[in-house]
Length: 287
Image 1: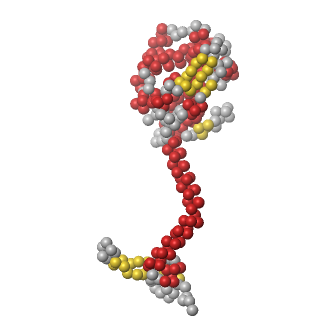
Image 2: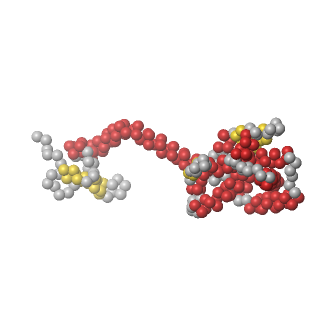
Image 3: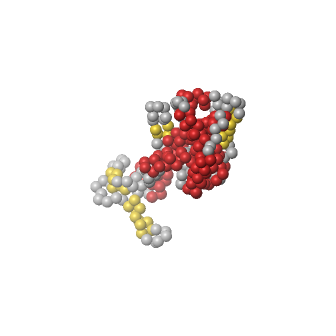
């Protein structure tokens, strides 16, 4: 007749019915020479045979069986974990090394007069700096310990401006670079130029920006003093032309305005989505 099964207590120990302590087996530690106590593994085979070797063997068999049974689940979890690591690494990067793509054409347009205009990332660099500079003020107010969290916020506006702040920032860079390029072309076609005083103010503003650039911004955007002066002058001319339009009764002249959007449509603007997508606002110039 089979012996009465023993009562299992705890994990990795057992007690014979009526016993007062777990069954143990004395062993000698091969490294120290000291006596140690081995608790039997809690397996059916160990209960039947009661030897250390059988207990370990039974445990190995059980582990192999568990691995075979749950292998698909384990592999799925590993895949998800690796994907999460890759996504999290990618989230902290700009998507491309900005300074290595400055000559890539991001936007092309053809004016009503047939003249073609191409905007490279170098042409957009000034607007990248402006959007990140203004956004960083809000980011610091949102969470000074982790400002980049601001750029991962999802913004939902009834007016249609919905998306992650980083994506909206990228859109603002392109929108305002295109707006200024169109208005500069319109101003030049009508003979507008900056006054001597406006020229001087633009140079002073460019110099101030150039001297205040962070090391990361200077490295990423590769501004030269001359290129920065050129960007500020173009922005100034575009602004002056917009003021002229407004003073003469023209409304809806900014991005999203009906009059401006109709003018923009006449320029057949085409964006290179792959190039523009590489601009990850919040990571280009901010330390």
